[in-house]
Image 1 (cartoon, rainbow, N blue to C red):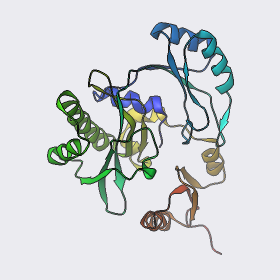
Image 2 (image 1 turned 120 degrees about the vertical axis):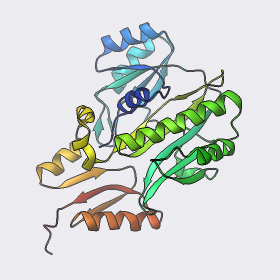
Image 3 (image 1 turned 180 degrees about the horizontal axis):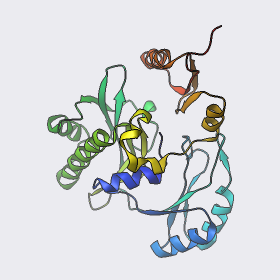
Image 4 (image 1 turned 180 degrees about the vertical axis):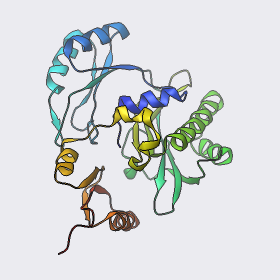
Length: 278
């Protein structure tokens, strides 16, 4: 289950991870009221499960009410990669000194969890050469590894201490919520040296949802997933460009591992449930 940005941030905040504050809205009146409550400028961010919203112009800074009204009208109902924008986040405009990348993901090829971090945040991590990847045990505190990552990022003083705290909290989040991915991109350093999650990407293991009643309120299907379920198939959408169709879960997972080993990125995987015969 892939969460929207604001949903992931809600969970981050429960774990004490500082976030960019905001209000989720689905109409212009609430958008204006939310912006006036926070004060302009604000950032208007489309809430989508697909990637590429920045390139699609679906994240914009609004300096006043007139700009907000214009951008809301432009964005609401617009489609990005087949997904319609029906909710927007009216978010606070933060002072930013630097952007970092930090994520914890289920590394299927190594059968463990791994950390990726980079001093170049706000961009696709696949295109970044300057990054560190470390395997972790999510049931441990991983202090030595986190310290190594913090030093790699050349963080100092208050920022370093804040990073260590956030990293440990994100590891605990991944472990307790059984997440396959928890990504903060960017994790921003503010002018005062503190850190905040400007964005979130969270994927929860669907097979673990029966243990997490508190997460079921986030369970929503995309239009493509609805169509797949209607046809009797299981579909999971991802961020890549290679579609995977498999005749059973085992074959699907093996194919995903092979793609990963070959540096391929799956766009989705469709499990036909072992029903294909030819």
